Length: 92
Image (cartoon, rainbow, N blue to C red; front, side, top):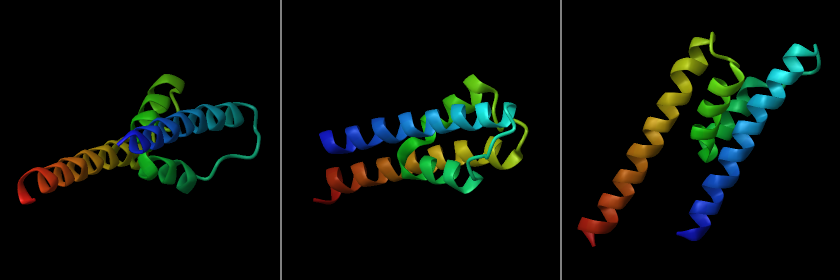
């Protein structure tokens, strides 16, 4: 359980940082972080960090794929966690 918590904290920090870095790069006309990398960081457990980064840095907030996609990933992750929890609690 502690390893899962560490995993989630690390990926949320990474996703948050990637949003901030990409926003900085966009403002300074530098090479950008691919959108698939931003989504992958969310899929690997950093969806909350990605959503907070979008909000805090005002980044990717006009892109419907991010406005809908990041919360959808979070909802799916919560549903999966609840499903696993239910499975372990009642099926054993």
